[in-house]
Amino acid sequence: MEEKPTRRRVVLVPVPAQGHITPMMQLAKILHSKGFSITIAQTKFNYFNPSDDFTDFQFVTIPESLPESDFDDLRPILFLLKLNKECQMSFKDCLGHLLVQQGNEISCVIYDEFMYFAGDAAKEFKLPNVIFSTTNATTFVCRSVFEKLYANNVLAPLKDSKGQQDELVPEYHPLRYKDFPVSCWATLESILELYRNTVDERAASAVIINTASCLESSSISWLKQQLEIPVYPIGPLHMVDSTPTSLLEENKSCIEWLNKQKVNSVIYISLGSLALMEVNEVMETASGLDSSNQHFLWVIRPGSIRDSEWIECLPEEFLKMVSRRGYVVKWAPQKEVLAHPAVGGFWSHCGWNSTLESLGEGVPMICRPFSTDQKVNARYLECVWKVGIQVEGELDRGVVERAVKRLMVDEEGEEMRERAFSLKEKLIASVRSGGSSHKSLEEFVHFLRTL
Ligand code: UDP
Image 1 (tube, rainbow, N blue to C red):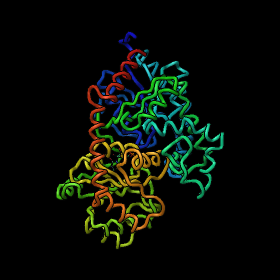
Image 2: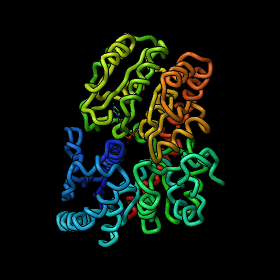
Image 3: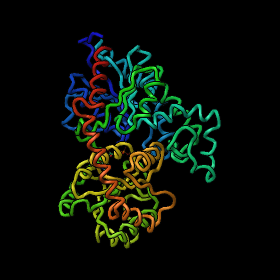
Image 4: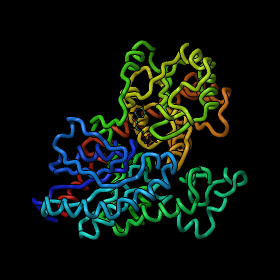
């Protein structure tokens, strides 16, 4: 199809959370480098303050008046449902103004899969709209089949607190019921409502996914067959663009500390931007790390220990345990940390960005997922890519010590490191010229130019 030279502005709408803002900004940077003008439409909530790296972008605010406390009170699923209702009208107005301002320059709206109000508004203005999945393809598949499985009562065991949770979901190998992307903070009905809205892909022009075919070929094939629109797996985007996008200030002193450690001797611990730990879990983790005799770099994000600002609620013993072989920061330059030769393992909540960043550096993982897609990622890390050890059930010091030693000391860990290294090579090849993600990105850019 012939490329049209005029409409070159793309409006991008990220979910206001670190793990969604980062890949959206990476995508925006890549599209900008291909000649597109960029408008980022974001909420007041968790506003991303653009640095000098983004001077060529236009930033607009979608008016909404959600109190900051709503996020903590509602947690992700219910918050997203409310945010979508709140932004429905205001984004329509916002897009209307942009169309008046920019004339026919706007070619498309690309929105995070969970900001579906943006897709609705684009349709009203008859603008092409593209869903950007910042989670993985397998989770996308689960969301697509959720309604059917729910209606057929296949997901009934999810309501069961013990019973069948360990069994495989029929036809969704290797996922067990407990790996299905649901959340402990919302009912199945609320999750169903959110998923029903996010996977209304029939009305979209295309889907792009931050994944690579060497990671999830069967899920990607399934989506390509089932969805009636083009599907482009274009990730991992952080391997294509590395512009900093942190909402919190990174403490770079940990790199100096890592410089003093031996190769593959440090385990890095971080639970991303949303997960919460109980005080007793933090203490058990500290104690297990201490008795493992391994060095560790631990990100304890402010607000990540329940009912506490930071670590002030912890007994004195905590500091004694971590000061022997550990280093604690509030927020780290994670990609730099994972690329550091001293880091030999990553204890993670398995958010999709953290998973991709770890795989992209060939670092094997200890998986401690909390919610939704993290559980799918953890299962894949352990059973499909075989570069992770999943820690399940109650967290006690013995469990922590054993998992850390398996990954950092035992031969089993060394084998995982080798597999992680070969996966890293595959990922590098996939984003290079001729690689599958590179080709997909080129095809997507061509698709955008023909709109
Ligand atoms: N991150 C970081 N420094 C930290 C912890 C996390 O820069 O100390 C970044 C990390 O590199 C990743 C993002 O925060 O890009 C977290 O996203 P992820 O999808 O892993 O988890 P979420 O925060 O969405 O649960």
